[in-house]
Image (tube, rainbow, N blue to C red):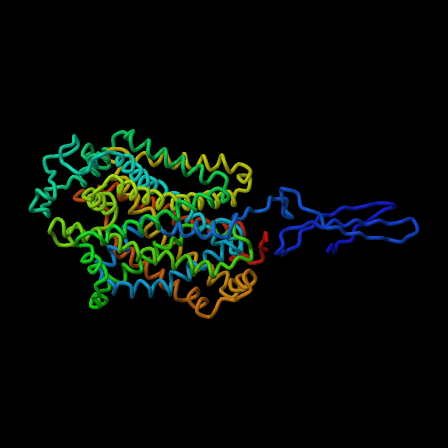
Length: 596
């Protein structure tokens, strides 16, 4: 309804478009025609007309696009949260920290911190319809934390894409009659190379298996570097694989969620198919049941060790993907009335169940390796890149039809990595184009700029000494800084914007106000948990190393500068805002522009 008086003259007419503030049936336009006859009698006529293809809001900006289907959003969130760490990190932590007993602290922290923070980010993005920086129009002084998480996602992309390129390199190498990591008679092997079967002292630190030497000497060529100050040139094989990954990312993201929402139908579902196939094969192998029993063995005495609780809390912080701005970016493309509460419960639960399920796959093969080589399980159990690029390929190489199994396994790694990398890139792209509106019309070019810039920086990680750069980035880019970012985010929402106001926003969206449990977690439990994690992260800090190689002091300084560069966005922007808006510590008078 138009409330503003329109002056009309003799035989004059006015056409005024208007959009309703809330409409579940989609946007419409109201055409109001006022006609004043000469005899003084005024007639009015209204007509509902179809909107033009390009919708604009009252400020003249284009309507925000939304996911094609609800399942596109769910698969995107699941695909981002379920990444390589679910396969190479959680199962090993569970085995090392009391088996099934580790689930007690893991689920405890999941309930009091993981799910509430996950829910908070989904609701924050959906209500404000902006990226990680733009959502802080609700409390401008905290906008710096938006730039913090955008920078962190960008930094992670510098090295995360390299992992995917390794998987692609292995995939190409698997299309052969005999896998190249089976024997020690290759050009890259050293005199220390020794087959498991021919080596009675496998634990000898001077010995290396063919799979280990293939990864370090055949793929990385780390033997040609003396350290991080001796990188050498990018290797063309890995550079080519990295370029393929970048191209895949670009064409998955260049049109926004309309394209990425379709890609995740493959990348988010394929890992579950492959994990199931690998489990069915793994449980038939000798020793597999012993491996699974070791994975599930319960040692409640381990719960008396504070380190177990710290590792469970750390795993929760990083496994759900909060603090990268990805959940905010993805949910910002939801319809305003979408039930984000249900989405948070479903997707966070699936993430944890996937971690637990992958443990059966991993330890069935580790049990098989332990049985085959007649060594203790802890001799073959490890986490990180060594699990998926050394131990698992070695186990696969002993199976009949090993090349086929290798292809299947590395396709799984590719899909696990691609959709997580897509999420990180989308966080950066959405966060910046929402902050700098002129970029909306040039999304394709801006996406190209981001992926090319990421590719150029990543080249340092595919040199002979690239593993040292990779390790440094992995250690500093998203460690303490991301815990700090989520802490500031939680404080900004709970204590400055206000839990009650935030709950009102959620009730406006889904028609249901968050219960007292969620409000208590947001206001007290989650901030205290995150503050504890930040303190622990600083207190337990250890300089990075790769094997026996210790990084020089200047490299550690570079790493800390990288970490601090993202964290300083919070105070720098706050100071800027206080200087430009004196007295307005938290301007909550800004109105949300809701595209519903």
